[in-house]
Image (cartoon, rainbow, N blue to C red):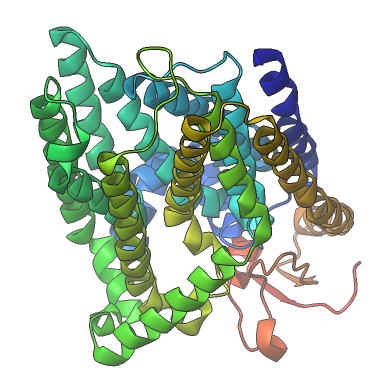
Amino acid sequence: MSTGAGLLSLLPLAVFVFAAGNARWVRPGGDDWCFLPVVRDGGLSAMVEKFYLHDNGRLVNAVLVWAYARFGEAGQQWFAPVSGALVLVLVWAFTAAVVRAARLTVPRGVPLLVASMVVALFLFGSPNTYKTFYWPAASVSHTLPPVFACAAAIPVLRAASRRTKVLALLTVVVAGVSLGLLSEETSAVASTVLACALLTSGHLFPASRRRFLRVCCTAGIVSIVIGTLILYTSPGSRNRRERKDSSTMLDPDSLLGSLRGFGEIARTLLTTWPYLGALATGVILGLLARGPMGRPTAPGKNDAIAAAAGVCALLVSGYACTVITYPVFGEAVVSSTRLWNDYLLLYILLLVYLGTLAGRAVRSRVRQAGLVLTVGAATYAAACLALAPSLAELESHMITRAHDWDRQNRWMHSQAATGVHVLPYKRLPLSHMTEPFRHGGRAKWPASCIADYYEVQHITQAYKLP
């Protein structure tokens, strides 16, 4: 069966390779216009100063932006394949660690089968794959943080000796503080998950490891709070709250609007059928898994508690994320799908877990579950294939924009080199990326950043390419 699992996992991996190859058509847009000149002219210190003192206080975010922006346009294009490969490796390692901690035995290729589908759905199942996967500015804030949170659990799940437990605890502390300085929304999700784990630890954690796991959960929550406090008290965060009028976050109208928005998001996620691939993945895992004695194990009371805790964590943290972002985005929290990513990974993992419970229940009651396994594999394959058409359509739009962007970029650089101080710029929108002169030319941002990028004084709106 390990061969079959390995072959089946080639489908989401093929989707990933196709999507990663299209990253060569990525060109700067939105916030990139503002990041690139800062890194070019001032390096890491200028980027840290911009984030901590002026923008939002996210110090770790500033470091990650510097890491790719220092390579200019090439950094934009390599970000998606490099970060995507990192996500795949971390989710794969996390899956293997969870299976081992649960004392389950599975065929060799199954962890990769699970991880590849989770990653494919997480990165490419979104209504706006460009902002989730290709746009570095959104990815470092909303796509990578939940994966980093999962990665911090790997040494905890694998720790056995006193030394590895100390290292695991240090990892949790460093990861928690870093998460607090990277993403307020993912911090809310991680804290909620850890709190739910603490509350149900008497049922979910084995007695021999209960104390250690409780210490890790507590340390994670405390370290996230510390990082968040550092961020919250920064000048940049204060400026952002003043600009976006975040004082309205807990107003009744804002809370009600957040509830309506999260309800609409939940409806969209529940009715997006490719996410059935996560359930199918769990069913396959549950059918193939064996317990400590080498036999199928039926779900029990503790599994029901874990599932209920997972659902509660998803609902509470998802609503909390919507509350945090509502003052900034208003009703657009529903259409700004990159904001969903902070809790979307939790949703996909929860679907896998529920599917695993279903697969285990079937396997414990039916001696020959070949038909169920075949249906699960077919659903797995169908979900992968469903991701391809939107990626192909996005590739076409990316190619068109890349050609237009390159043409305009060459002309603007040549004009700036002759000493021209004011240049016309034709907006080149893609996947709702922010370009200047929106709303009939009234919305100027990021026109000033584009002028800085080309080292001119101003840009004006052009209606055709040069």
